[in-house]
Length: 165
Image (cartoon, rainbow, N blue to C red):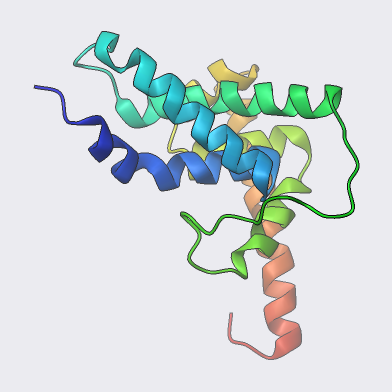
């Protein structure tokens, strides 16, 4: 018996949001991709095979929805001085974590996607390579380089503040 969809949203919502934020950066676009992911998932939910790894499936759906949002954003830029929506705090209880998402967003694309799908989405290197192209070894290297870059930045900041490593 398949679990209720509400439980799936509860259990995997934070993971999907982390993937969307890692791909699109923090803000309304990531929130939109999160919503689109679960709308698409709800539509496909009755046809999903019982043996499907739900978290990996949702990460794949989130990947595609994030790409859709990024393409739409590139086509329809509308400058405005006042943003109509605020930044969601769903899945991110620490408001200072937006700095981390911004740092992830500044990684080179391959590193950002590898970090998003492997570290935040929980996909294997093989699954991530199938999503973004390349080999599992190349994905492993890109994810490692991305995490090393983030660690280097945060260790340097901690050392500057006098915090223990």
